[in-house]
Image 1 (tube, rainbow, N blue to C red):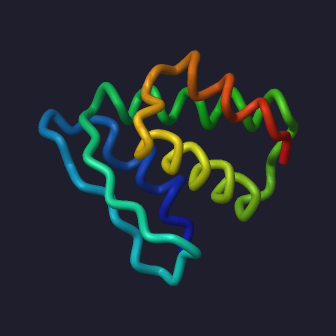
Image 2 (tube, rainbow, N blue to C red):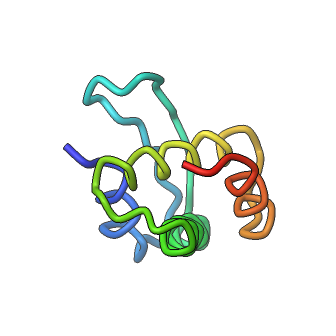
Length: 91
């Protein structure tokens, strides 16, 4: 199940904060509260990063999404800061 991409695309329109917590055997569990603005930012970062680094395979995009969510859960919440941190290590 590709929860990372599904989360970004399916719930961008929410008006109330939600908690994201995957349960599909991911390496690490992340519990994240995000509102629609956060989800728009996360989606934008994922799309830009994957386009920039030519990441097209679903599994690879999911891994990028997991890394973005992990950074977000650590307090890296701005689009600029997320892209900067993601670009430190290329997939």
